[in-house]
Amino acid sequence: MKWDHVIENGEIVTEEAIYQANIYIKAGKIASISADKLDGEAKEITDAKGLYILPGLIDTHVHSRDGGATYKEDFYHSTQAAAAGGITTLFEMPNTNPPINNAENFNKQVENLKKKAHVDFGLWGICLGDLNINELQDLNELGVIGFKYFWGYAVNKNTYGLIYNYVKGMKDVIPPSNDGEVYQMMEEVAKTGKTFAIHAENSDLINYLTTKVKKKGKSDYETILASRPNLAEELTIQTGIAMAKKTGLRLHILHVSTAEGVDLIKRAQEEGYPITAETCPHYLFLTNEDYDKIGPAMKVYPLVKYKKDQDRLWEGIKEGTLSFVCSDHAPHTPEEKEGDLWNVPAGMCGVETLAPLMLNAVSDKKITFQKLVSLLSTNPAKQFGVYPQKGALQVGSDADLTIVDMNKQAIIKKEKLHSKSKVTAYDGVQIKGMPVMTIVRGTIVMKDGQIYAEPIGSLITPK
Ligand SMILES: [Zn+2]
Image (cartoon, rainbow, N blue to C red; front, side):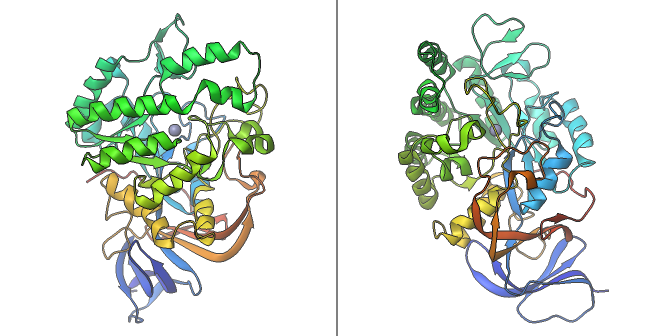
């Protein structure tokens, strides 16, 4: 048998072009790409006539809650959701319990996740200031994809869990790092050459405004927005960029939500600094005006802002200031997501709806098909040092393919999501253009919405 799997008659989409060709897979790798039919028998043949073949899509920002709050979500479910949504690789965030703060916990997490992984995965390492400043080089050598710093968040003294609504004087809590400590973390990560990714919201400002605004006794969306305004993101991005310039750091701004943020990042890029940024579907497809219809399901941090921000984010994508789009998948149970908006936790499902929403944007002509491949596959693979193993349709690359049907219409239904907790802001949203097959290293893991394979995913590390 010459080939393990042949994908025939599909239209290949890369960053540069769309063209018809057959893909020949052997031992999990792309062995040949040819417009002509090649000789040799195949164990498996997929006819992709009328379908588009994309390099496997990557979601760089996923919180699967595993270990830790596995009653909300776990890696078995989140990677099924990923496969169902056309994602072949995801990068798991490190704010788990235990967090990915040292070599021991990194190794434990790999053992924990690989039994449950339906798609390939990379691991982020966490920066906890003085608590693990001496562990970062070990994490680098083990192959973290990058380092995440939750700027402005306090840490529980015992579990090292993050405190999302820190108030001065809390017991058993290590307060947020000061700017000197942040600078030291940046110096340390700069030595690794890897990405230092920040949650950018200024907690001092948020604390002050929260106290002030709460006195009004209201808990509508506009009031919450007044407590976490655009200025909170602007301040931290500004400080982050200023510090990164001095350290040579590859600074990455996570989930950018404001026009001010995009402008600051653009300026730093124009000056030649290696500053990158991402945004998420909720900032691209929702605004504050959607709250009346959707309710607390759409509460995320940073909060979804205004129409002018949404417009600037799309512009940022077009001009290249924002180099990828990811889900910030962060499920909570439906019960947790109901009630007073001040108390509802931030986050919702996203890994399964990321690609459908972006494919729908292609159908709506908001972005080109090639641009989608850049945003969801090639750019993230390059950013995190896994290109061309991932993010490419080339001979020698992993045979990770996302096959999509641009004529297929679907309605997102929360009860159909594969995640454990089924909370989404997109319940009832009509989509044109759906992933119909997800292939990880030659193996079909999803076909027509059904999960096929057992967990075959494995850890990937930067080269
Ligand atoms: Zn996140």
